[in-house]
Image 1 (tube, one colour):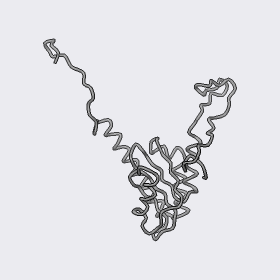
Image 2 (tube, helix red, strand yellow):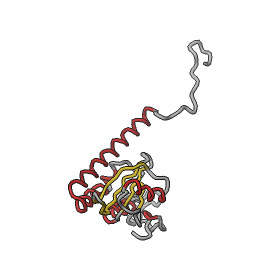
Image 3 (tube, helix red, strand yellow):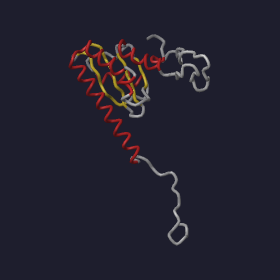
Image 4 (cartoon, one colour):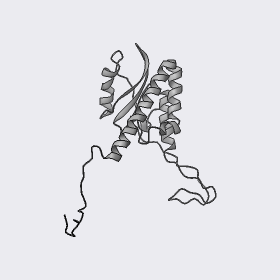
Length: 187
């Protein structure tokens, strides 16, 4: 995927849906076809395509500060799917391969893709099925099992993150309303 948004090149033009006669430009809904625009469809397809074809992909989840790394290079243990903390920069991610796959050289090319949606959205976008198929072709049932276990781990991490948000874990109060005292005085 030379020059695509996943490799840091210039962003390609992203189609935003079919032109529908009578469509409202602001909402994207057409009077005749009632078809919404999907500006992220091309991006999701690029991510799925990278998972299908790139040698090394780092799919990172900023909300979870984690990266799912798909490395199809044949090392001592064959191809690998790994879960690691999110790297601060592309250079830091490349350098992390010295730790993650010490038996292999640092990859010559690395495809990076951010996933800002829910982890389960990978399924709806066809990215999970692309990952499973690629793992089946490159590494068989063991690699598929590895990828499935890491996907379940990401789902669990996301559920924990959501629970922490609801419970206020790691949050602090910025402002608190004063509540009148029972006798009418302000507390």
